[in-house]
Image 1 (cartoon, rainbow, N blue to C red):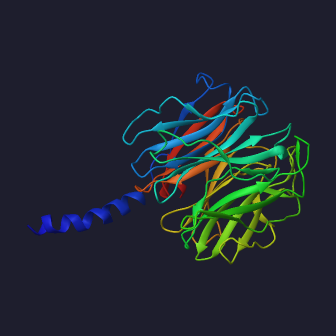
Image 2: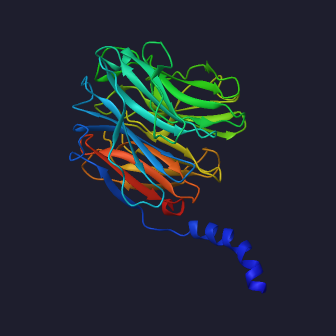
Image 3: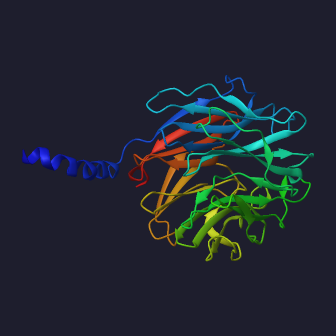
Length: 353
């Protein structure tokens, strides 16, 4: 009788202990050239739904600057072993689309943010949005979230302590496809779900320019963000990830400063775990998008003593996107093989150690 009474109390403790035990990081190749959405599949983002399903979004087509690109979404139902075939959910009849970001808000609404390119370069883009009220089965019409030229999206929103949503965006300038201009800046759009209104934050400015910010709220109103550095793609020995902080809930940001992490002008992901710890996924290189590495911080981003290589070798493992599910597992997606393959890795905090 005593054991039966104690079992319900022991289960949460046993589950927590299990998550501290290291397990093998499992990685699966989920979409490749055989997937009929065009050879190009990049970048991928992942969302965890309240019913246990996972959604992955990416944009596909003939190439990065092709005019036939569209945003595709695939689903892995709770308990299933296979992903569904990707389904086209956003396409412009006249312009290229890209950088799909999928995310479920606390009220259950699933958001898809993406960009529509109105010209020859990304600096001609605008941010568009669609929503779903049935977990991604059906979608609203598209709407332009902003009319500002060169504003783009890449990372998922986070929910602030205030209940507002913080959407990371960036303003890319210049007409050179092989270089990010130094006046490219990161900023944020803030959504008030009660008032259903959007506002815009101040900008993060830095030495080489910065883009594609990834934020976390490490204390109420105290935010930390890492950003991809600007410049070219040939490799730069002083090309570091850009770090910035906000003390007023993301409205205003301090200057972007060089961090201790190298960056080959490639996207990163900052994920805050349920226990408050931070995991940074990045390419640990000044010139190559390999290896894909995870760093763990237990003190709000002040130190990062734990590093773990997720994928390495003569390939490109790029544009990580991660989410933690209620069971404590971290689901990470990234692209490889010349932006033709989408990979899905599953790990725990213990695996990083």
